Length: 230
Image 1 (cartoon, rainbow, N blue to C red):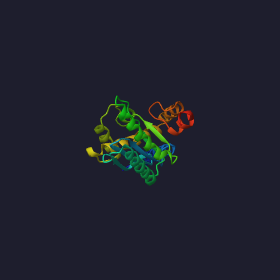
Image 2 (image 1 turned 30 degrees about the vertical axis):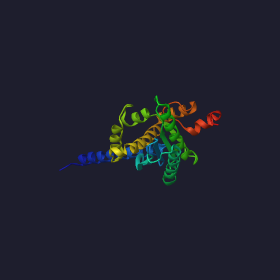
Image 3 (image 1 turned 120 degrees about the vertical axis):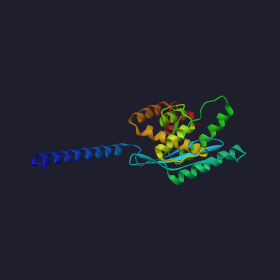
Image 4 (image 1 turned 180 degrees about the vertical axis):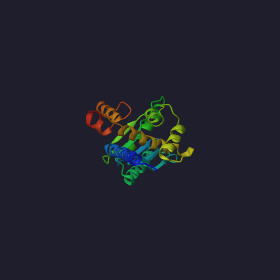
């Protein structure tokens, strides 16, 4: 039989365990409250002239949850201006339905084909406009920065990014949905950077300096550079 001293020791251990668990729970709760992204909804856009990918994340309890992901097919449109109108209409519809607080969009990569760059830049601009006309701030990330945020490797493939998103967010994918997971990856990249104190500080410094760098706010850029917008 246990003596009175043994019972006191067990009781002390139980109390200590309860205190540790309570302290851990309180720290986790404080971390959630301190997260600037808590409760926000982010729409991520992977712009394209043939297929546009999108994904919507909501931050609940300090955890990003996928609300929807999909693609906007543009191959049936022969007229490039019809494509732009369709992009604006579809992204506007997504913004109305999911009411995002912020938009994250992939920046066009620089290549040798100038015409392709111009077309992609137009698609990106139209998608951004769908958010900006509703006073939703837009943040831009380079493809390499997005891949690095998700996989740790800036040169990761679409398949690697998609596979990791499936593990992180529980998203099932098929090869046809890689553009959709690319859009979701942009949103998750934005969450990671914005919820990190270091990432937020870097983002603010980049905003103050204009649009160069991995992430920036177009609203801040317009305010700081009115002479560049005519």
